[in-house]
Length: 353
Ligand SMILES: C[S@@+](CC[C@H](N)C(=O)[O-])C[C@H]1O[C@@H](n2cnc3c(N)ncnc32)[C@H](O)[C@@H]1O
Ligand code: SF4
Ligand code: SF4
Figure 1 (spheres, rainbow, N blue to C red):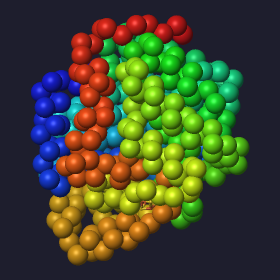
Figure 2: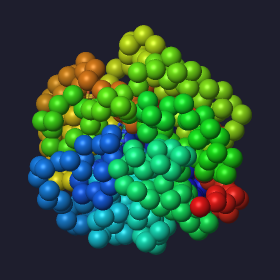
Figure 3: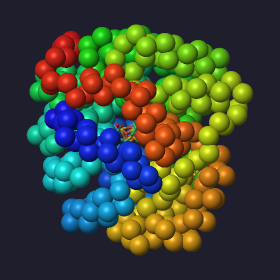
């Protein structure tokens, strides 16, 4: 499915409503069949139980009541859940719904994915050996490329999601050119790691090999991506995000205040909510509507706003673009891409496997 114009309009309307530009990431499971070097999820030995389908639906209802606009379904690998078809159908009726997959199951579950607005397939390199090394599984490159091609052929709105690290930094320009030439948008993450193992759900695993040490090269990449955005469609990162990253890498200065629990929140596989995955859960997702305006949540927002513990792009993005103004900035910055996403499904070209 591509984003229908009706849904795009509803998105614009909700973005322009004060205090409603809320984004949620739901980590539906911490099970995973991959062993990525950057990732702590598969290493987790902690609580494995997951909320049931009905509990996910009740949680999604609570998020809709709160004014959440877009939901990202992630994990672990969310396609490992047997009920992912039902969850995607339910979520996409209420939100702009994106789902992540490492590429290993997308084709097998293609009928479920038809219900998503966007499918992000994670791939870190155009070099098969390097990609498989980073993903910890032989054949990961081939599977991801085949999945991207298969989804695009079926008219499903698919994007490729690289995590930029020291190992692939210098190929990101070619990577971006390769996919955008084929009509496949690129959604970037930047390698980051958690400062602690204490939270229930860890993502970034400390790994010296991946840590970006060539900060000048990272700053140059930010400049190049800003330039590429002017020249082509499909570079899915805003100038404001790139400028914040550039400054961070060059000077260590943070030009944003974190907006966890204001502009975004996360839900873990047990249906518990935190501002972000680095903090302990504070409530059940179904309790959110009654707690959202409580003094306790205001105090937590103040604490998160002073926090400088991480620079995950998914959190940075929703912090630098704040409120109605932030929503307008995103629309303006990504106008060309919004047109790309709402255009007819079949115009994109094929990628060789
Ligand atoms: C945690 S994964 C979960 C979804 C799915 N298993 C996948 O890999 O797409 C979501 C995204 O986070 C990225 N990621 C993994 N480790 C990361 C890290 N340390 N810093 C930033 N992003 C990371 C992955 O590459 C992927 O694109
Ligand atoms: S990044 Fe995704 S595919 Fe890789 S181990 Fe983590 S959850 Fe699994
Ligand atoms: S900066 Fe924000 S997103 Fe990052 S750990 Fe702190 S509260 Fe969480």
